[in-house]
Image 1 (cartoon, rainbow, N blue to C red):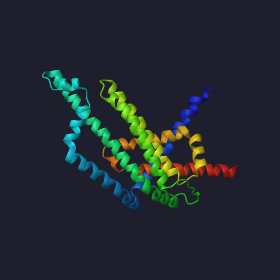
Image 2: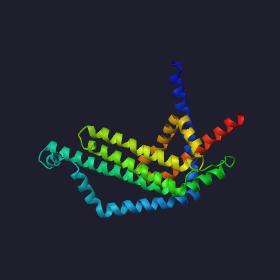
Image 3: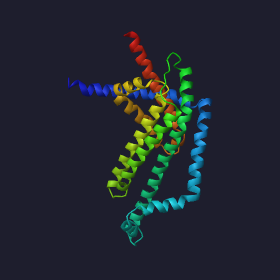
Image 4: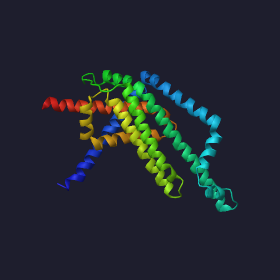
Length: 264
């Protein structure tokens, strides 16, 4: 029995990969439709206007503030004379700009996920009419419920990120600090987006059963969707594509469950 387990896991992983690519292709075609592009226009303009204004008026202050987060000994050494001090100063500046880049990705995800709370019903309705009219929609919660869950998940993520941030400025360990900071970032994305979409397709009990039954599969597919958030510039308008992908994913799972129970 133990000998078959790795092959079973690898087979399931291959199925998730095939499913992910199939959903990506279908979702990208939907993403380019006139209706979806019009929905996505608002969040894109909001994100670009927000970050454009912030960095236009406060770019130098932001860089200076991030530098103050570094230990004083590192700042003093970076301003000293010598070849190694010059190299260190360059590395230090790159570290600060990378931190700013990571903060931009984080904030853009937060803004776009919050915006998706309001257009997700339109996406679910669009895909239901186009591909899955035979699937019976169920609901639990509301937009207010989704906003409350969003805020709860946001607070949890920010607390976790606050704990991990000091490790970012410790030499060598900082690389691992950035890596581990992806974990709360990803969980915020997965939990918030999944609940927002699934609450318009399933009832609460069937959604909980689905999470237990497809736990690993759901993590894998959600992480595949999450990776698009890490692509510079594209992350400003990728949330709609991720919403389309997750909506297709949940519809497919519900469709399969309905077929299974109808045969039983």
